[in-house]
Structure formats: C-alpha cells, structure tokens
Length: 151
Image (cartoon, rainbow, N blue to C red):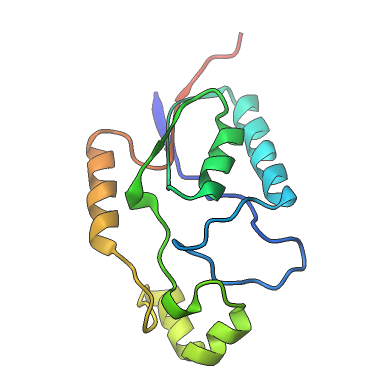
C-alpha cells in the first residue's frame, strides 16, 4: 500500500523568540529544536515500519534539511511548486510589525479565507499545477512512503 505524507519543516526560531514572517525569499536553516522535531518524526515513522521511496521538497534549505533527517537514505527532489509564499514587504519582519502594516482584519482574511494581504505573492496557479501533476502521478505530498512489514 502506498501512502503520501505531507511534512512541514521543523522550527526555524528558538523557543521564546518572537515570530517573524518567513517565506520564499528567506532561506534559513532549522533551529536545533527543529532538528529535534525532525529526528522525532523520523523515529515515529521508523517505529511504524514506514520506508520512503520518494521525497519532494521545496528549494528552501529548511525543507531539504528536514527531509534529510526524516528520510536520510532517499534522494530528495526539489519541486518549485512546493515553494512557500512571498510575504512581499513583510518578509522577515516580526509579526508585530506585520500586524501594524496590514491590520488584524487582513491577517484574519489570510488565515480564514486564504486572501493574501496587499503585497504578498501567492502563485496559486503554480501550486495547483504542481500539486495536480503530482497527484496524477501518485506522487502527491512531500514524502511518499511504502509500508514495510517488520521482521
């Protein structure tokens, strides 16, 4: 039986650090806690006999780093359609500054209805085409796995 798993990258901020808007233009590594999260997920999959046969990642380092820990023995394929959105003028800013610029109403519209605030770039067509092509080829998601029987 084949299954697809969608895995988000691990933490990029230290515990207690103020959140910032990071997206397509900010290519940073995982924080140590993010690596710990990836290792925990790798143990989770291993304990359940999950073996990966294909791994798709966005071009960003944090996603490749997470995949390298979770599925260490499988080559990773960069898929541009998995790239995060571009937060435009808010990229890299602390959440307090983002809210000061766009307001709570715009953030609520983004979080509840996927309506991007002014200046944010969401290339939905690229994401839709990539996701659709992946699903048609049975490669949907970031990590595709095959269940392995335990010895």
